[in-house]
Length: 378
Image 1 (cartoon, rainbow, N blue to C red):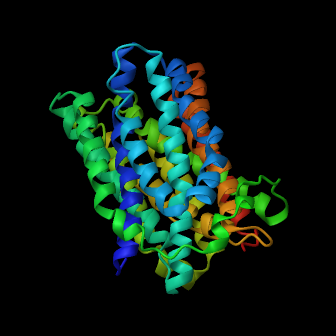
Image 2: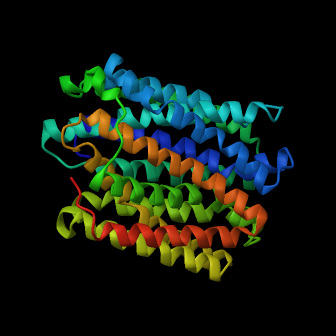
């Protein structure tokens, strides 16, 4: 991240993480405010992946029409506004509506940001994909810590999210000029980048790995704070610490990922990450205490750290397809796993328990670890 363009696109990743980390920490607040059980909460959270999936190809379309630069800045501003909605409404039906817009903003901005990263890497001959995803993790950690402090001090979450939205809006304006200096490859603006195709062969296996990894990641974001409160029964000040530990170690793994991946190989890093996530989930489930749960979730964070950077970078190199096409397809399934997976976790938790739900996620981490050892990446 040694140049202004890299830092600017990294700031966009940070903003997404900051918004999501803040929202995820306040999920228990929404559950309390509307007296929801795990199943109802899970169904409401489904609105976010619906927005992401239905607007995913629209992200590629906007990049092809407006360009990556405009889409990044517009996506940041749209997300800032959307994330302030769910915590500032008085009627339950408005929460899923706001979450739908959140999902749409995430999907559109995510595609544009990753295309921006691949453009910088190709034009400047540098590796920043893992570091940029690390900036998302840093934002997730900072957002969850600050939101946890707000909850501990019993301040108004809605007012806090309005301040966060103002901060992200100001950040978007601040980095706008630098983002618009990023070299954008002409073929990324072709309409063909919006066309959907069915994944096959190695790309299909990558999709399966991505779904497993993103279900793990999404579960940590949506349910860690609930787990710390309802299962661990921790002090309110520690409710966000499980998510913060997860985010910290995910950030560290990604910040060092651009060095580790070329050294050890993408397949080994992917496979090791799956088994490390499995170990971390086992610790959290078997030892549901404050410090052991934080340690377990931190191990999960380290395990998932390089999964998205590796898969997104590989998706941008699918033979015979533009970067926008490969990234849009990967993002479709990744967002589905990241956001729809936790909904299923909520339904299973309501029928059984949250610990059993995390055990199922543990099994998905094992599948991802096994498949990663054999898949041929692009």
